[in-house]
Structure formats: structure tokens, C-alpha cells
Image (tube, rainbow, N blue to C red; front, side, top):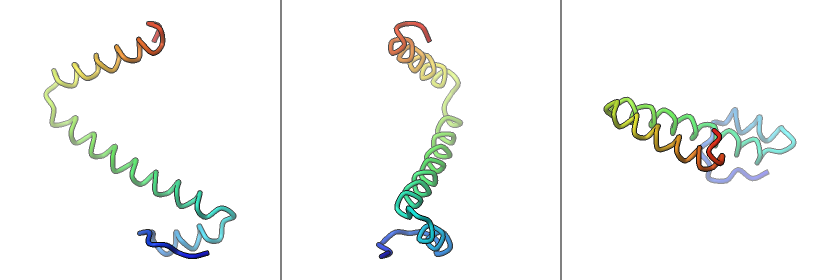
Length: 73
């Protein structure tokens, strides 16, 4: 298997290459890494917001959920 221009630790690459489905393994690992980074960044942004803004966003999200669920969330 060819290692393309991906920033992955050598140990992870060896495990992935040894598994039956290396590209799926790598894709999952990369998605999880970026998901954690996104969650951390979002938590930082939310922590900096005033509570009224958080409440507004929560209410907005709830209204979308209500509409999607036909009003029964």
C-alpha cells in the first residue's frame, strides 16, 4: 500500500496498513481527530458567549427540532 501525503503517526500507519481495510481505519481516525478539535473549539466559543446568546441559540435549535419532529420533540 502506498502512503500518500497524510499527516499520520507512523505507528498508526503501521496498524492501519496491517488491518484489512486501511483506508477506512485512517478515515475514521482522521474524522475522530477533527471532530474532537471542532468540539473543543466550539466549547471555547460557547464559553465566551453571554448566557443570553447561549439561551437564544438553544431556543433556536429547539424550534428547529420541533419543526423537524412535527412539533413533538
